Image 1 (cartoon, rainbow, N blue to C red):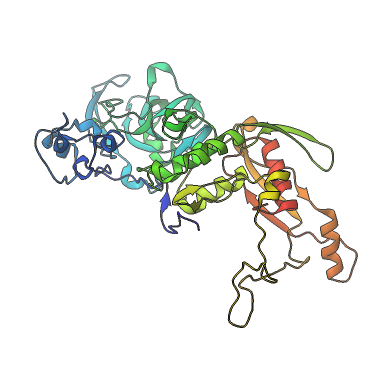
Image 2 (image 1 turned 90 degrees about the horizontal axis):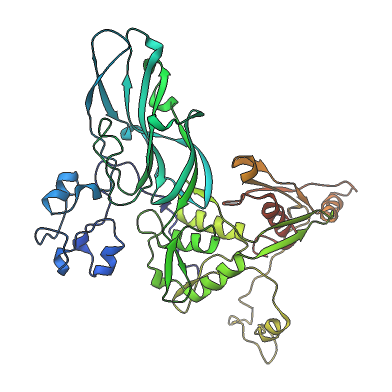
Amino acid sequence: ANGFRSPNLPMPRRLKFRECQAIFGAYLDTLEEIAHNDCPYNAHLGGDVGNGLFTTCDRKSPQSCIARGVDPRYHLSHHSTVTTVRNNQTSGPQLLSTARGNESNLKDAVRVIMGVRRVYDMQVLAFRRDYNNSNPDRGWFDAVYEIGEGPIQGLQDANVNGKPAEAQHYAYRLGSKPENPINANLTSHGYSGTAIFRMNYGYINPGAVSPESMRGGAIVFGLVNIRIYSTESEYVEAWTNNRAWHIARMLCDKRWGFGLDYARLNISNFIELAEWAARKVTFTTPEGVVYEHIRAMSDVELTQRTAQQQIEDMCLAGRFSRPFLFQGKQCIVPLRALTDSELAACPVCTDYGENRNIIVDENGKSSVSRSQISDLDLPNRIEGQFHDYLQAHTEQNAPVAEDVEQQLKAGKVLGDTSRRQVTKKYSYLGVVTEGHAVKFSHCIIFLGESE
């Protein structure tokens, strides 16, 4: 049974709200739960955070945190504030420049980066135009750009519209909790839990640009607090590009993921899956081209789609089964060839004879239904796309995988000897090397999606 179905739950799912999106600590029952929560209030359990016994929180503004004795920097929101500063233009009197929040114009959820990705489309959270009336083209556009969910390990090559950041006009926050403001002259809000960078872009005529036209970019080294288990009870939180632990985080993250407890996972199963995923393997195509790659490496940027679809896509591109429930725990297994001893141990299922163990109805008809895809409909050409790290993580087409014999069979169905191509296209989530993409395309065409 598939135990994580929730067709309409988006992932990631934290939008740009002015209200705090953390679970108020008073709703939780243990100090351990609160330690992994975005709100640290724990006075109801005898902890040291909170100035009274509160049972609810309206979460409207940082003042709600202060009233309950919580550091307002924990306010998990996009609560930008308006500030005004004096701007010294080239000549003439000082000008007043006013910062503005841009959250209400942003509809996408906060992105999630795991592994390493070059991100191109970071949006403006807050900005200020510093005009220069004496020389209009020698003004500045000062802004805060959203990288994604934090805490991340780091970033490189930060830029705005391709222009590299200069040290004197640049700062960043990795998305820890709590966070100080990145620049109080832009906003006093720290964007707790969100990785951001600030860049003062110039020279430019700030009146000629908008937040929508000024986009940030960088190479992002993603989440640094992914659980990596060594035993069923022991783990560290660190950066990793192992697909098994990425999927576990997607299943369990309370802020942006599916929200399960790690106790719901079969941890021993995930440890075995992670070891299988990390092996270096060699693959030779039918044409004799040899590729080496890490079997199921993952460098992924998650943008808003359904949780079920994103998790299934991560499993598909890793050659994993979909998550399934076994003895009350979520399990995922690698799609691999069985050994002779494993095959011998497999139970035999049959719907006829004395040893029948498949249910039949009152008329003796088997509950197993059989179907077959026509050669005319069976995919015989796979076109896969991946984000090639050698090409700055831009989307690239993998070499096509084709089954020529199957194409000839499709032609014969129509009564001729032509090669009939039946193409199916895939986007391989988290795949960044050609070898990984090529191998997976061939696995699909010769073994099927679930092998």
